[in-house]
Image 1 (tube, rainbow, N blue to C red):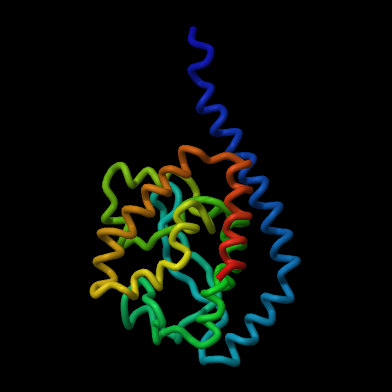
Image 2: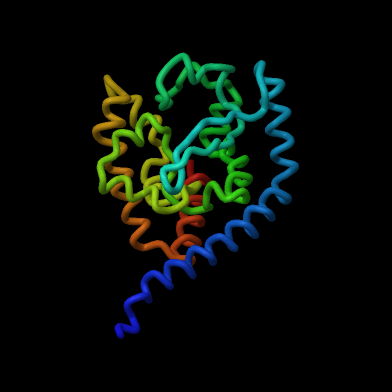
Length: 213
């Protein structure tokens, strides 16, 4: 009998459980500690433009299953139906407060609730919309074997993705043919190296990148 045959699977299962515990504890604390900031953001959104505080968008999660990703609203109502699914540079659909929230990734704060619910993890590949997931090849679909997250290698590398796409004559084509494949390679790299220690390192690296913007 090969005693070590099941070891990789066992280690992966233990890592998954540890990540889940970390996700629940860290995000529950974050929701409580950041509540005053979130209330200020909500007031600014309501005062800045018509529409609700939150924005929900269907994304693809673990196991190729759809879920509703939650964000603070940064665009005018129904703006996502009036242009590209991606945002490019100084997108005129984005509100004044929305530009600020996006710059410092504050619009992502409500996703702590997605994490507590179990749709996402703190660290993992950013969840994509179905339109683009349908373009993945068999290898790229491996990113759906783990919970999507707020950040990973690709999120850090492409933290200024909108500005990058603004330089293209055809932003969506550039995204599909160049940016998305490069991000997916980084996503796959994360999946191979994932661990609690690596997750904590990526969290601090992400915070450093945001603070330096």
